[in-house]
Length: 377
Ligand code: KG4
Ligand code: ZN
Image (tube, rainbow, N blue to C red; front, top):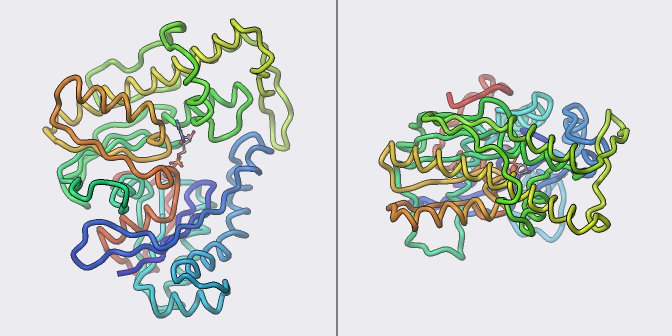
């Protein structure tokens, strides 16, 4: 079965064509095209929902055309070819219907409904968060084919908007265990990076600066040491901000839509200050990772599972996966970790198609609505 899948929950417009062979448990990606509006967000000092949706309106049709053409290895990219491929090759359409920004979701959902009706294809609504987890089922030819994901498993979703722990018995039988009470893990990375003058997404920049630092030199608070499966990152962000305000002079600058901070000129900082900045970033990263690992392993032990799946943009953080694997080896835990291939950690159409293929439940197009506050229903 082949699915055309559309993801527009936040600032990206991503479209994929994915395929699952009859008895296979993994998903093959035939094309995955993402149009990003990152440059625009850098100008406006962050994602402005209205602006993001307007860019997506412009991007959605060309991205669909490109994804369909590429899936059939067409030399000549055209709407006519795309229509034929959709008509003949594609069995169904999948779309993210939530959670996310209302304007952005509407662009994807309404386009998918129109295509479903026009081309008479079944339509599968997909929860964005499930997409992040099931990105792990996308075939990775560089991996040992023997290493297969087994149910039950515990999943940690760590993205710019979400931090959730979920227990899965099967593809559509799951239980939400806990999540963040305030900022998401990625949001904490992003807000702290923004304070240093770095645009969204800030996680990779903090990780880069952290690689030169030593977390022990600037201790930040250890967070949410309680017994539950919840997280909180806003206090950590404040602690980070207090050190930045005390030790560095950060200047505010006007942007097209508010304000942002001038980039700290790291190269020209005195050596000691430069090291302090690296150490501070290492400490921030360490505090975030430490609580993610502790609560994820706690959930795995509590539910007696041998498999953990990570997903979402923050799962691209190398230190997170390295430290988690190290802890499992050190404590001799019988747990296997799965992380999506890096290109499928951030928002992408392929992960939405992957979940649609594995769970395949089409719904009448008239009953599908963009649902910004969708959760693990
Ligand atoms: O899943 P995603 O693309 O979007 C949401 O659904 O939110 O995740 C984006 C988030 C951003 O917060 C970004 O800073 C973070 O993922 N991120 C990282 C890394 N790469 C991306 N955070 C930490 N370390 C990274 N290497
Ligand atoms: Zn996401």
